[in-house]
Length: 234
DNA sequence: GTCCAGGGCCGTT
DNA sequence: AACGGCCATGGA
Image 1 (tube, rainbow, N blue to C red):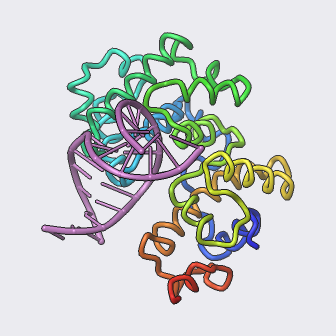
Image 2 (cartoon, rainbow, N blue to C red):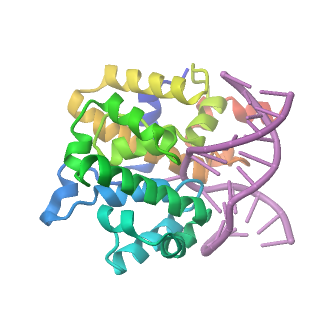
């Protein structure tokens, strides 16, 4: 059996640190700027989209000085659609980015310190009520913008849990609970945040390059643990 | 031309 | 509860 902490060790030794979104807790507030809102917008825009396209949209927002909660909550929806166009599904994504901006503006005076400085479960429930924020987007926001110890499950994680001998029923909540409890039992509290952050990135890297819908098992770092390649050859 | 990327909503079964 | 259609651009 493969356990989450073992999966982390294997992938880390194979891929090394990937350094995705902010790795240290103080990153967001460097030099007076606050990149947490950029992470929130990025989490929505990357829904079923390539990150390179998300970067284009974020760059559009930055160059127009519009990467700001108050500005987006007042922004013309047509203009916002044009700005986020490269990420695909731009009609709904423009709405979704506007919804959460309006929400943060009207309920928290656009103050992310107040928004994030509460019990994790409460923030999560609130996020899930906002149209366009599902479990993965909510958890990405909690982990990568809020620095909360939440593990993000995505389509790759589910696929890998189905193929590898991992003892979990592969639904979102089951996988998340299993990964969080296993990692929490094996590591110190101050390491957990970094590991949740890194493990999600490592899994995406594995899913993108090896454990694809048409997998490349011959060079996969998990080949000797995996049973999927045996299923394929039957 | 085809496939698919760091999902979520909504309607049907 | 689980599944399918839909949303849509851009790079491989």
